[in-house]
Length: 199
Image (cartoon, rainbow, N blue to C red; front, side, top):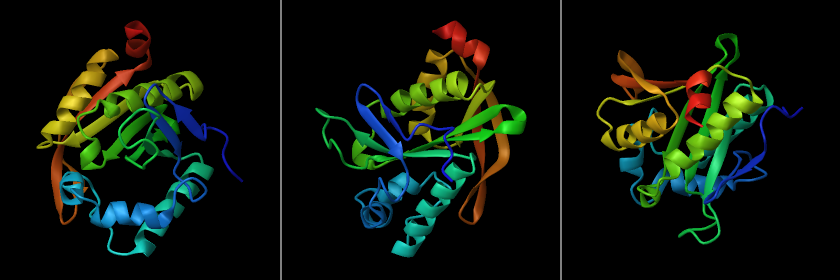
């Protein structure tokens, strides 16, 4: 049974977010992107996953996204630029909102193909996922982290966290698994109160 907690599709001014599921995303197309897309090594450098080695790995990833959606554990979306944007309709990356219901909070996640960097898409999808967290799911806090050395993510996150009234909390030492290593991450958060004040 499919969870109705999360909207299957979200439209922004420049983006279309659709549920990351086989009915919306071609597994073979996603495998090509996640395994051999131009710049995939740069994309995954600061992510907890490496380029996919087989199409089965991609299929299992999509299946996990479907299962977590159905269980109300995560809302994962494929990101596509909208009409009028360069690369309109293509899968540009993926994002997610991961609720921790017991703590009334959620974390944000995002990755974008290299050729879609620098367009402000990170902040645009963050705005709609913050709205989802606070207005629809009635959560109290949204947080996000980045690898301590990831300057691009730091810049994008600082912009949207500041725009929505949030704050940098500090460095979490030895926090995130990255292949065979564990790295420091920087954490930011936005409370419901901060979000509402910033609107």
